[in-house]
Length: 158
Image (cartoon, rainbow, N blue to C red; front, side, top):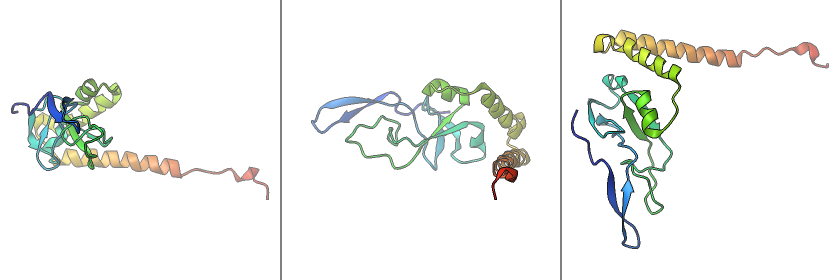
C-alpha cells in the first residue's frame, strides 16, 4: 500500500472570492484504477472491479452530496453525475467511518464469503462461482416465494 492522497481538507474559493476550507468525508476510487481505502486514502494493490478487489468491502454513494473527490458539495459546485465508489477493509470499517450501524450477522456472512472465495488468501474461481450461484439461488427463491401467492377463492361471491 502507498501513502494517502490529499487527506484532510482543501481550499475552496467561492463566488465572493473568499477562501474557505472544505472537509473531505472520504476518498472515492476511480472507476478504472486502483482501489483506494475510503477512510485512509491508502491505495490497495488491486484494480477496481477485479476478482482480487472482491476481498475488500465495496460501497456506492449516489446521494450527490459529495463531489467526485469526496468533498461535501456547496451550492455553487456542479452536481456529481456519477456514484462514488468506496472501498473498505471490511463492513465494520465502513460502519465506523461513516457512523452507520452494520448488522453483525451480515458482517459474519461477508467474512465467511470472503474466506470461502479466498481460501488461504488466494482467489478461487470455483469458490467464487459457487458463492455467486448460491446467492443467485437465494434471490430467485425469494422472488418465487413472493410471486407464488395462493388466493382463497372460496370466499369470493359469484
